[in-house]
Length: 323
Image (cartoon, rainbow, N blue to C red; front, side, top):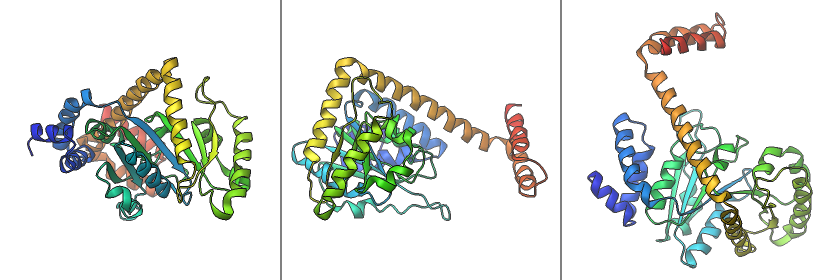
């Protein structure tokens, strides 16, 4: 497809064109990056209207089941839902499991939904380098709800919180031991805490967990002076509580819009995106710089053999890059 055809395809919601556009913005090849920039420039005026929701939680909390249930509920009432499911990258092979399409079979086959698994490639915060750009493509394609599922393996969640409008933290019933190990910072970033798997025999434990997390939130500072993060139960398995949960997300947008905080958050997202791109490009440029490449193998060998300190080796590489 030509660039013009790709833009037209994305704007018309053509799934093949959307898939190709996402693949393009995920590519790290220099010529692809240039094409991706032109594509994003053309799509930018048509993006930005979606509700962006980040979903995080410890492994086993049921993120994929929850997202499939929520996404299916939303498409049933007329929404077009995009899911960016970030899979852990293998530290051995560099590949990723990419299992979210098998964990979300119903949503993956829903014509009103688009599920895109992507490897995290070790990126801090459990999101890929191109997550923001992918969101722009999907919004331009007409998806009015974008759900970003993070890896949720204890990495800093600050990155995803800075690129979404609503940060949802999923917890498990039986908060006692889990509450001891949770990072205070994650609670402070949460716009809502949902105790998932609140079904069957788990219901009493889930209600207890709601009380425990509500108490814990009193020790944190909310992200907004006009929004107190609610704590509630839900079940991705049977759908209980999902309508109420989505209603809270809609209420949050209304409150933030009325106070001007919505626009402020979007402005902050754009600025964070800019600096993220600057850091990525600088690192790419450093790794490709001939002067750095000339020193790299020797510097790495000296660090491995203990002949120099990592800080001294880093200083040499940066001096070569700057010189």
